[in-house]
Length: 478
Image 1 (tube, rainbow, N blue to C red):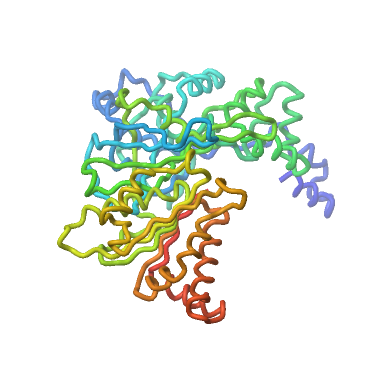
Image 2: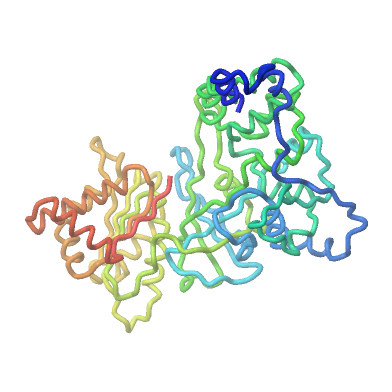
């Protein structure tokens, strides 16, 4: 806005005869936040409040209804709560990867799901980080609050009864504000600059918020993935009001995982296959993924309730009569574990269509996920056995001088793949969203072109038609 006014003043000095500095001081040029926080005397609230607070699902719904943050779906209340009953490491210790198999039981209500569905998990934040944030911002964790838009517009929905029930400030922070994982946006630094009392901090924050400081802000903030708490600790003179924090702190988002179990094989349970995310920043700071590291640190004996949502992903559950070509390197094998389990549970009197599965990992000894499971189903008339018309093919990319990936194994089975495709097979691909999906698509192009002796362009059209018919599905994640 200051740049705009400067330009207007240059265009016509009559706009600001005494200069823009006289009209608008950059130190005071800040509006109120768009939301307001009301504090309540808990002693005067009705008794329903205390009993409601014991209900975790209600607390989550209340907090997320009040929050101005945008969440991934409209449902604020979790579908149910799960309890972890198994936490098993699948990858070898020292392999450089930490992949876990988690098993959960339903504890609040049983939700019906299908193979190929996705589970969204709301992670818990580190209690020490939450306490540090509350102390740093000089907040009362035991106070009760309600949050609402400061200037409600006509099109804004009328607050529900749930939104009007106060919630404990600490609980609201724990359930809705990502204070120790997500990085704040540029506007956070701009607002901070108005509440900095130390001149050198104010100057630095104003620089970060300016167009000139954009690159340095990127290096300091996004590239280092600094959290809100870390930024606030770096600028100790800043005393930002809680309403601004509620508005500007990134929302605590759910994390989505492909379900790796079949409800037929595991009634009352749901399984996940999770890579524990970790990386090193340019300044050699070790970082961990919030949700995956929290799940990996849980002890099944602790009986921690985990709020979750179920929804459809990109992989529709196939009928038993549909032939399948599955490609799932790494944790991309997760949904296909459920597919194979489901096929193995089908009525033996019913004929099931063949399944080809192409799996890939770095080393046979280090990260061959679910090795015994796949091998058992590839023998003795199992779902992936040759007797059933199926097959299991695995690529170990680092076990030989020349790297071998799933697409190389697919080319080795070129004729079988084409025979299944022309017989009506559906293709399912899952895994990393980097190069893998495009490479697998290109491999299918090559196989179709080779086996039918048609130009590559014709193979592309054939694949596009397969995709349009709902028989080529991809679920990829970064």
